[in-house]
Amino acid sequence: MDFDTVSFRKALGCFPTGIAVVTAGEGAEAKGITVNSFTSVSLKPPLVLWCLGKNSSRYEIFTKPVDFTISILSEAERAISTQLASGPDCSLTGLPLVEMQNGAPGIAGALTILECQRETIHDAGDHIIILASVLRFTSREDGAPLVYFRGRYGALMG
Ligand SMILES: Cc1cc2nc3c(=O)[nH]c(=O)nc-3n(C[C@H](O)[C@H](O)[C@H](O)COP(=O)(O)O)c2cc1C
Image 1 (cartoon, rainbow, N blue to C red):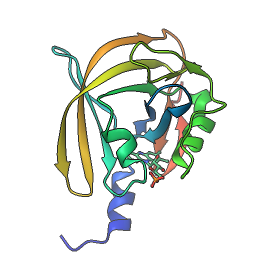
Image 2 (image 1 turned 60 degrees about the vertical axis):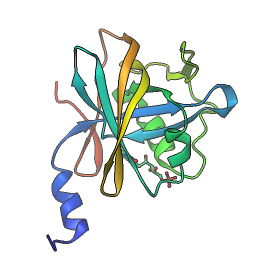
Image 3 (image 1 turned 135 degrees about the vertical axis):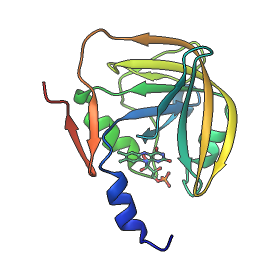
């Protein structure tokens, strides 16, 4: 396995994904991170996962709280994705938010918002895998997803 990381990353980028924002913390303390590692895992019980880079400056922010919220972004929310992928300020100030019961706000206008409670953390190379139960969710019937493919944002062809 001595292939170079840049080529490997490029190869993996051929798998199109949606974009989600994970939020943790309450009120003015709430922070966010853009992720495309979000995956649904189980329907019964309801489980999802996402991966967090071990070298992220936000590591503590997203590993300390047990409760967090995942918002699956619509194609209209590209700017939010860009903002929360740029460090080091990952505060949610100025973003359209929805209050959630667990305290961590959702992104208003997102296609789906999942209120999550962490179950387990798994070590996985330069990332960790965060497996969580979904306690509550809201979901829109309309709207197209924000898509990520080969390092660029796009939309689904209608
Ligand atoms: C499209 C996209 C998807 C990303 N997915 C993830 C991810 O799944 N997990 C992760 O830890 N970081 C992911 N990132 C990186 C973070 O959004 C953010 O850029 C990074 O955490 C910034 O570094 P810092 O945490 O050290 O400030 C992604 C970035 C982009 C643009």
